[in-house]
Length: 203
Image (tube, rainbow, N blue to C red):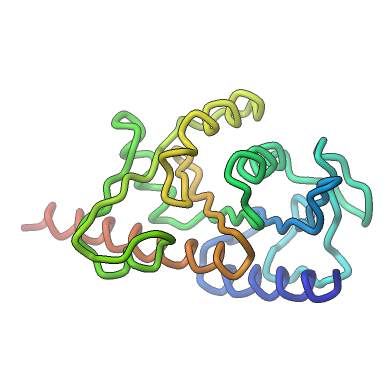
């Protein structure tokens, strides 16, 4: 528990320093136990760059806070669905400019294609740059049940990442280390794609 808390707060601070969860943006979870399911999370409405280990909360499979002070994020339900459907050990949600913008731009197409980049090999199961992945893009919805239901229909095709239109990236992995790697890889590719689109506009 202590180690998991330290690793999660360290990860949140790193992502905050990268500009991927400014203000009170972002939400992050790590699985502590599966039977019964317990998640370690940052409380809602706080600056994720200044959260200490003792500030974290524990949440059960119903999204209820069972330990710690603070409110669980409204998006806890989506974390739970990703964990249940993908057997993820950690879920990280970022609000980068590139992820927010590109997800809005690609909402109509329903996916964002990433192709031919060496950094794709940082994603689980990808062994060559000579490939493409399709990151699902789903419409945002303040009804978290509907948002989560929409996400579930796309998770089997997702490369350990999903975009919510105008909102940002959800990335996950078997454990926190892998989830962080997937977040960094996908955020790099989102930034690359955004800059590439700007170059094309000005050509």
